[in-house]
Every structure is written in C-alpha cells, then in structure tokens.
Length: 133
Length: 133
DNA sequence: GTAAGGCTTCCCATGATGGGAGGGTCAAGG
DNA sequence: CCTTGACCCTCCCATCATGGGAAGCCTTAC
Image (cartoon, rainbow over all chains, first blue to last red; front, top):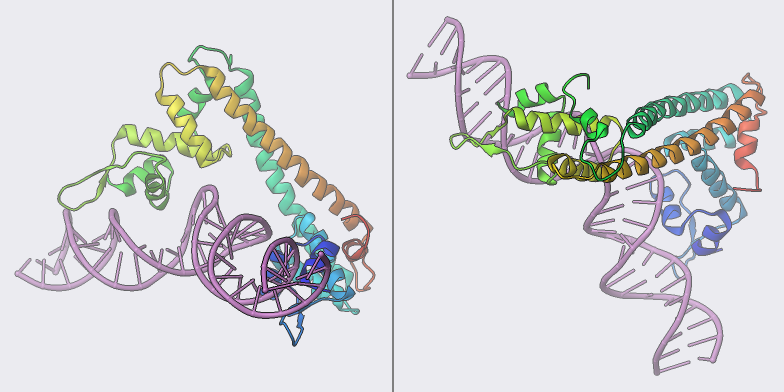
C-alpha cells in the first residue's frame, strides 16, 4: 500500500504521515527498493487510525506517543493509561472554563451594546477601561 | 517612558510590545535620537492596555486591529463592534462545544477503566477501535 | 511518446509567545 | 575615572500541528 492509499484508509493525510514518521511518532515505513516509495500494511494503517482517533480526542502528539507505547505493551497497567486520560481531561476542563469565562463576559457586554448606528459602545468602553486587567 | 516601564504599566511584555509594533498592530513608537530607545506616553500605554484586555478575552490580533481602529473612530457605529464580538462569541462557543465533546467521551472511557495493574483498558480499546473515526 | 497522477524531498507559513546571544547605553558608587 | 548592573537594541530560534507548493522522479494508461 502506498502512502496515498494508507492516507485514505486511515484518515491521516499523506503530509501528516510523513511528519509523524519524521518526528518518530510512528516507525519508519519500509521502502520499495525500486522507487523508494513508502510501503504500508494493515498494521501501519491501524496505528495511523489510533493516532487519528487520539488526535480527535485532543491528545497531543507527545501524549499519543506514550499511549501508543502502552498500547503495544501487553503488560501495561491500565493505571498509566487512565492517568494520561485524566490529566488530559483536566487540561480540557481548564481550557473550557477559561473560554467559558471569556464568552460569559462577552455575552454580557454584547447584551448591553445597542448595535446600531450610534457610536456609544459598552464593549469598547470595557476594553478601554483603566482598571482590572 | 522606556519600553520596560510601559510593559509594567500595561501588563504587556516588552517582547510583545516590539512584536505588536513590528506587525503593525500599534504604531511605531517614537525613538530617542540619542540612544534609539523607544519612547512611550500615557496614550500608548492605554492602547497597550486595550490590546491586553482584548487578548485576555480571546480576540485574535487581527480582530484587535479592527477593534482598535473602531475605538479610534468617533463616528463608528456600535453595530460593527457588536458584530465582531458576536462572531468571536460564536467561535468560542464552537470551540467549547468541541472540547466539551472530547471531555465527555474521555470521562466516559475513564469511568469504565479500572486504572489498576491489569492491562485491560477500554480507553486503549476505544482508540484502537476500527469503526467511526 | 505523452499526459496524468502519484511519489519523493525541501522550504515556507501559520499565531502568539518566550528564550537567548551579542552588543550599545546609562546611572550610581567605588 | 572606571566598573557594575540594569536597561535597551536587533536578530535568530523554538514552540505545535498542519497545509501549500516547487522541482524532480516513477508509473500507468492511452
């Protein structure tokens, strides 16, 4: 299977497959001796799908590297996997809370803004406010 | 006022002040003829505080450029400011929803994971799952 | 034989931020 | 007068994951 087909089968772009290989997230693919094309098998595609799914859950490449190695290790303690997941959940929750606070503030400011032809604007007034940053 | 003092007064790092100047978000600061140091006044600091506050609400530099120009324009229609804010709120909401979905999925997987010495792990099982990406 | 499409590598850009090197400037104190 | 420390300057590099695009080789089909 060439890289294009592996990309289609896994949902990871050819560009990203090469990148993941370069940074060592996935192993170096075999090469055809004739044309130097990368060659993938079903195992590789499964690995790429794993990466794809983990990315879609927001894991960083670094976290995925760890998850992949735990996945390969039949003796892994599930504790370690769970710990990575929990840490990531906390990270997501923190970022969500931060953005939620931004959105709440903005909704309130927007609610108070007439949004017409007049120049008076509580949104700008808030941004220009001297106090609390 | 030198850049260090302006940084302290505005909460924007000296590094970022130079960057904002370079990309044209703020005007080029006057320079002392003697030593070529940038020179800031209260007006500049107010502008930097505006930028700082807008960044803390998650606006991109591009959006802030627009907000700054509306702020300077006494004839601005508040409609335009509100439109920018509303778009940004929607953007935030979309990103929050996305991260919320990730967190929900992960919480469920984590809840089902024993997190002990045994290798069985529904989190890895989900990542390795062949179906729906 | 040629055209299309796939593969290769290499370089560049993104967005906002920080780190650090190498070198000029200034003020205070010995 | 000289040193020291605290500024300031510019320039380059790194982050993180992703895509764009160029130049060039290979293969397949017509």
